[in-house]
Structures are given as structure tokens and as C-alpha cells.
Image (cartoon, rainbow, N blue to C red; front, side, top):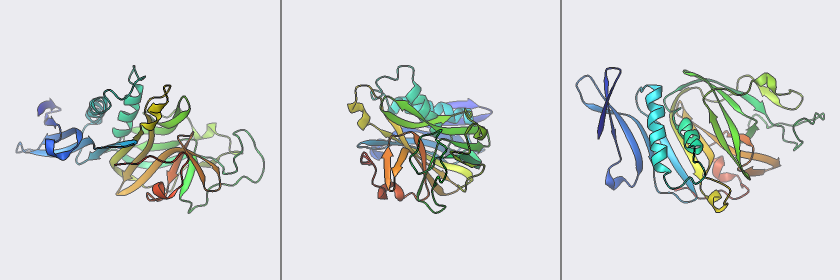
Length: 270
């Protein structure tokens, strides 16, 4: 266990115990009596095609310390897995997602893709969008107003695959997207409050492709006790959803992740 002193507070970092069958790190903070209390943990268990890493918030921690712990934990967990990320971008992207644990979300917004399959820039009349009660809706990107500033979830491309990209600052404004094509949402009906937990699902099956690294395929943010699953995917027609594609798909029901017949099939989780 390693002790650190910051801002007049004492922190301790420790690995899981050998009998837990987990990897990662736990952060503890000393209370006024010197007793250690859990503050944040970033852990990963046994995995198959999708490796899950989860950051769970317990009590306040400085955002920079969360970022540093996430970076160190992800680098350790993906040691020997990421092949081409010599500058550490895949690890940094995953760590950025995990570092949102403990932040407060005040608002979500973003441009929604239509469901008619037409290309961006095609402004034909009669476009259809997801119904209010749809279990899946696709967006070009999502903006989040956090207590530390606005951030963005978009997609990135790694050869033939797309994954989720977590931007520490917005790269796009809603006004940049043409309302003749997108349905623009100034405020989405998604949970607000504390991000209590962030789970990222890293697709390792893409390593069969010599041109690809692992891909950050999915994320679930637990906000105020409500899970918000996000998946890199795209709608190709009625009930046809393709994984590892260029939209940020928001699921209204966490169980829909397993109900939808994804193409290609979604790998097993632990």
C-alpha cells in the first residue's frame, strides 16, 4: 500500500487482495481519525471477448487525482494488449472515460441521426427519428455539462472499426449540425446527478485484425442510480443495428444491450 499526501489529506493506493480474482487499484482516503475509507476503485475481472473496466466512486476525490489513478490503472490493465498505441492514445481515451466517475452531470445534448438511412447532407423531406419510447437512439455525438466543465462523447475510427471517444472539452457545437438533417436536442431526457460508476467495455476481438488495436466499444454511466449505456454502433434499418460503427447509440433500457441482435454479434462478457 502506497501513501500519498495531497491538499492536506492522506491517500493510500492498494491493489485488490489475491483472493478477489480482480486486477486494478483502490484509492483510500484517511478521515480525521486517520482511519482509511474507500474513495475510488478501478477494477477489471476475468473477461472473454469484451474486457470490462469499472471505476466506482465512493467519496470526493480531486479530479486530477482521479485522472492520474485512472491512467495508471488502465496502463497496467492493458499492458501487453494494446499493440499499436505506442503514444498511449487508446489508454488515455479509456482513462478519460473512467475519470468521469464522481463528477456531476447537469445536462445532456446532441444531434440525433435520422432512421431513414440517408447520408449526411441529404435533405429529403419526411425523415423519421427514434420514437420517444425507443430502446435505442443514435447521435452524431453527445455533450455533457459536468461540474468541472463541458465534455463530449463522440466516435473515433481505428481502421475498419469505430469506438467511443471521450473528449475532455467539446469539439462540436449543436449549431454546427444542419437541422434539415439532424434532430437537434438542446436538452435530452437522460439522468442528471452524480456519476457513481463508469464501466467501459473494450472489444479485444478486433485484435484478430492486424491493423486494429482494442476498441472502446461500450460504456455505461450510472448517474443518480440509473444506468445509461452508450454503444458505438449505427442503425441500418428497422431492428438492424451494427456494432463498432460511427454513431453514439444511447439505450433507454440497460437490458436492451442483450436483447438487440447486434451485427456483428456482440462478444461475451464475464
